[in-house]
Length: 174
Image (cartoon, rainbow, N blue to C red; front, side, top):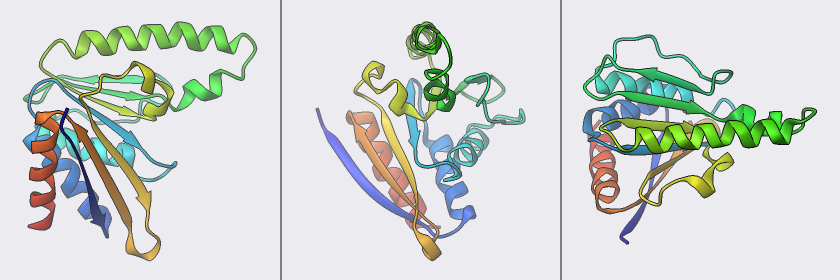
């Protein structure tokens, strides 16, 4: 399977927004996007920009406590997972059982969503990495000190390889 990697400098919040927006504009059906990076790296802000590029008019919020928000007002539905709390719940009394139960439910929903035309964005994907399909667009946002942020892109599959090339081109032109 074809794989590609790219690095993009994001010197400002507006450049992060432009990248997310471009992804929303370019996205086709059945796209899975994972978003990794430390707290405050801009994952949810990226999803807000992506939603805007899809034409979604609803207010986009972080699903940290619900773990899933669904948006249907754009040209493709957006399913936004935030799995940060899965690790936290594992340490609660009976937490491991709760996490396994919640994980089974989330993976089932993910599989169902990916059968239709939609975009699925998952923050903190490391909690379910073993359950994710190989064909996905992985985005990692990292701090780059006074230079803003760096975005690492990795795609496996023909669609993702083409998408990364178009994203790199779109951001280079702005």
